[in-house]
Image (cartoon, rainbow, N blue to C red; front, side, top):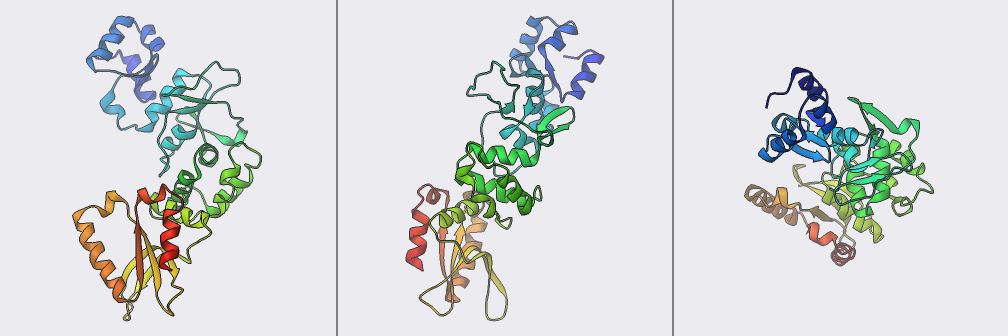
Length: 303
């Protein structure tokens, strides 16, 4: 359906998201709206909020969700997981849209929506393209207080690696959370953040080791042969206690990368070279991080 010119301009300004009220004001009957939804031309994003150009809106990504929340709940601030998606933060857990609503707002958490009533300071909110969103720093703080510590370190590491925040800034964020519900279980993580971590799984493996009082001696350890040629780079490294030389090299194997045939051949040759150099290697996958004792037990045995 061709939208009237004024409505097209409004839709363009709102990332192709329009409310039922705006559509009715332009002369569309509710039955017309439902017909377009039923035909697949439009998509109902939230109650009373519609995506009128699905093909174009795919380019908008997380902004569709943010815009829909702002239109459906006037005065709200896009926060938590929704803000993380707006800022394109990596290694963030999946979950329903989140926003901060005014105190007293009669909204109940549902499987498809998570309203919050957090207190926000003047520096916690940034208006982007007309939508109020919690800042990167505030978003990281909120996520840290509402998720399991095993999920928190990966996105903190990723934020530093991507240059979205510095380790110094993260320490300040952590210090500012004293007394906030949910902050105590991640109080030590702010000092453990390492932007050298190349994957969320690597961060999880390292945290399992640290929690078991077995911190690595090195992160992203370069392994070279007698000529100085780089033969491998280990995610974590431990000096072997039973040998004068050599390392225990720990690798976090994500299935997305290492399961590919080319990667399998490359990894095999790489770790064959490592074994010749009198090093020992261990490799862990996501399944190994579920039990907190699996990885530390294997490392202690190898050391």
